[in-house]
View 1 (cartoon, rainbow, N blue to C red):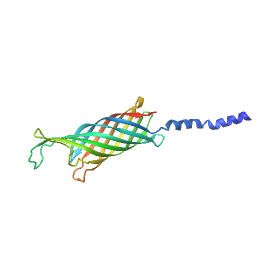
View 2: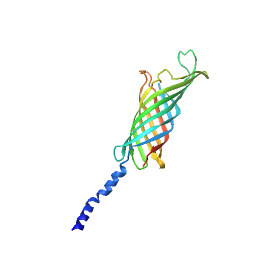
View 3: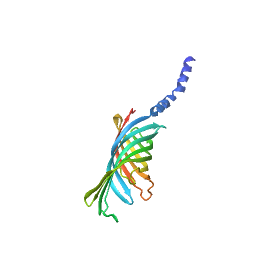
View 4: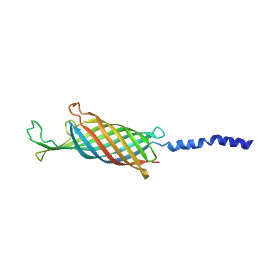
Length: 214
């Protein structure tokens, strides 16, 4: 009778063992990591578009909320560039306007929802707030540099935006991962200037490293 009782107890708890191990395997702890990379951006202003390259770097956090889902807030810095040409400006006493080059530093705060499809592959999506913290530009009139200045006092200074973000990552060994993301400006806030709505579309390829990885 004593041996039979022990056997019954083992049979009761035996089915719980795989479930417990499964929950444990997906019970990831919050993690932190760094990432950075290069990007290609399309800048649109008053119907005119320009293509340019830039760089991005930042830190990200990952807070699990379900078996495969997690919240991914980030703090990133981006260096964006703008290049476009215009043949002539109306009523401009200086003359023809040949080239404009802008350099803009942004601080971005994305709040993303991440889904882990497999052990090594994930995708994420969400929204992002961005703030222009430094601006500089150079203009060329008739092939000569006419103005070169930092902290532009125009619509770009203090320029803020709200963007949509979507991306994916493939995790390598030793905590590293390859990351591809796309962001697009949805709404701009530029010191109340409603006549102009600058917008960015950015494709970014980068490498990330996650500390305390599983």
